[in-house]
Length: 582
Image 1 (cartoon, helix red, strand yellow):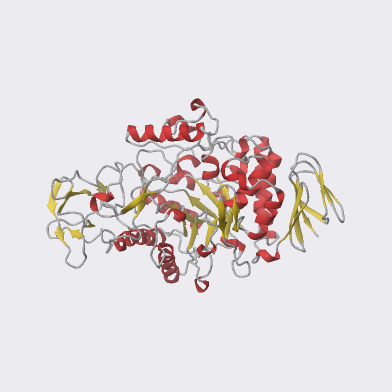
Image 2: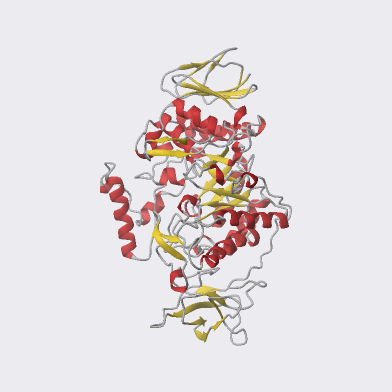
């Protein structure tokens, strides 16, 4: 629908595959007219039907043989009755109160990733609002919401979204999201939204009946989005208009672009460059920075390099390399893609260069991989690091968190490395208090066969790794979703770890750890110890279950344990660390 005021001036839809088309508004059908000014577009004569807030509407497409069932609008703003039902006309009016919000550049931020449905007991945007004071006290500066676009059923991670302009109704719908953003800004927190433009979910995706939204081929999760083929201009405009809506109308501060390596984008200008142009335009007109964060496993610095040097100019990318290097030396796991990690030498090298692979051989991939970052011009703040994420937890067989198989000392050590590093740190909800609840994959597709296929896919995937069917949670079982809800009652050990996270986040600001150049970072290691820091302050860490001595000394600033600090060395207990002033 075309926006002109609080509600659209008229109903219109891109449907180049239609021979005829009509709209059904509150049960009344009207023929659509071809738009002579826009190829493939149809519209309803405003003299016959005019959009009003609260109306239910759907489109019917005639393909030359038969009429379709009533279909939701591909650009629907709300699906109050689910992804298969009529769309709802909603007003864009909202009484914003965040007028003092000036935004934040990404450098210096501490991000907190969360899933709206399991973060609070309510499982809603309002439930997140109730926890904003807690997040401010923790010290984070921005929340990153896993996808909130509508999906089939009521329970899902969000990466099966089908309506890219709408907001899942059970979370609170578009009004609820705006209330959360408004409240977050007034609390001093930015809001980043995870968006999925590499595929549509399998449940409720009717877009291909309207036009060529899809291209031949498959990603790991669904059909390829048509970014490069015939009529791809309109598909790209579909994405860019959604981007503008989130950044402009919803006051979102940044977008996390899911799995950009899965884009089938072969045009001279990447869709990511176009997204950046939209974000830059919104930022220039509002005076509030807008961040774009890519998820990519390509180790390709073009994503985050400056435009003047041939890059796409994105604000940052998720960096799995540091996670993998850190996870393997602490947990000892070396299966699947972890086979390329597992030593302190690799951890030290990755902390020093950002990417693990810089046109070097990957045993897991069985070919050379990656390209080195130009450290003199790409600051480490453009790399986002973490001890875990929704993926690194939820893609395990049982969705077990690190807090369910590591000690408190090991958890604190991992947090210290990430929060002391010059990269932009991100926490995954609950890690700061060693949440005892898992975060398994869950869904509730409305089609029983889809649920069966998803279930069998998970069972088959993990059976290859030795897991029995009775050990892997059924994604469609409501109990799997319920188990993922955070428990906000903490025991003494959890409170101690939470205090450690608060102190480490506070020290990050006090010690000025968000450095501007990786070349200034000094990293050294021995058989079991590693040091990282500068001439002024250093982190010494022991990655073993035996005591270790690291060759740095100074004044103790903070430790989770009881290190013995001298002028030239520090003695650390098992899995202990010490932050020292030199």
